[in-house]
Length: 131
Image (cartoon, rainbow, N blue to C red; front, side, top):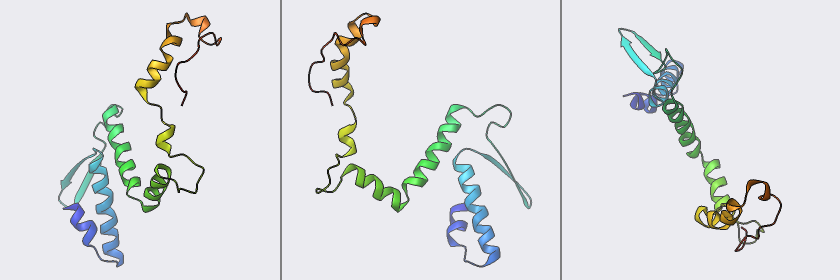
């Protein structure tokens, strides 16, 4: 219902306030806030108002903000540009800069087997090409 109100409101002053309120309430409910309608009043509070917010509530809030940001056209263009730079560009795609976890474990295995004081001395040769 909030989505319908938020999308269908026209642009005059009072309906603009209703739309903004509906969008705000929708966002708060989506990130886990509790609400209660009592006559003409709407009460809103964090889901865990007594104690601190648990990790799941924080994670949900951050995911909501991330999803909202990823819908922005400028953000989409930036990500596509980072994943697929122009052919004339000297830049590598960002995916080439992320290490392959299994390959990295195999390459660092000999270092991990050394006693801790010898790990940083350079006595171990890594096998394979370093990314």
